[in-house]
Length: 126
Image (cartoon, rainbow, N blue to C red; front, side):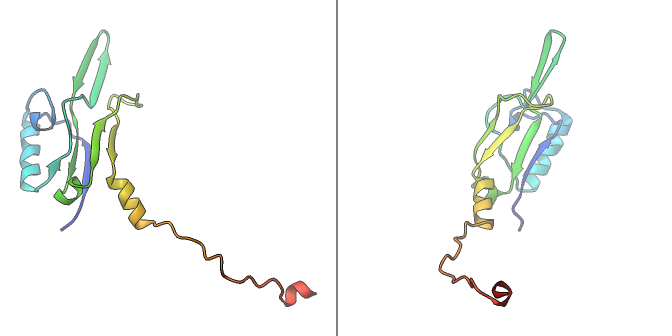
């Protein structure tokens, strides 16, 4: 069994992850999600895609985050950020899962300061 988290620009509409409507691609993707036992991490209906054209604005939830059941329990505070990005897609913020993984994989280690340094050797004496 593998643990995973996937974020993607699905270009699929479904109310299950906050889109305003449902299209065929969204139905197919939802079926895959259910059959694969994945969890939709999206919270709320805040648009992940904002496109400005002329005087109009198109807003939709097209980006989704999926996770295995185990990882889904480790993710806190999934959210769409208001911060400007270099694209028409918004930044998604996840907290906890990546930070905990880092701390487990790269624990802080204290340097042993009790080790005696060899201050003199033959090379220093000459």
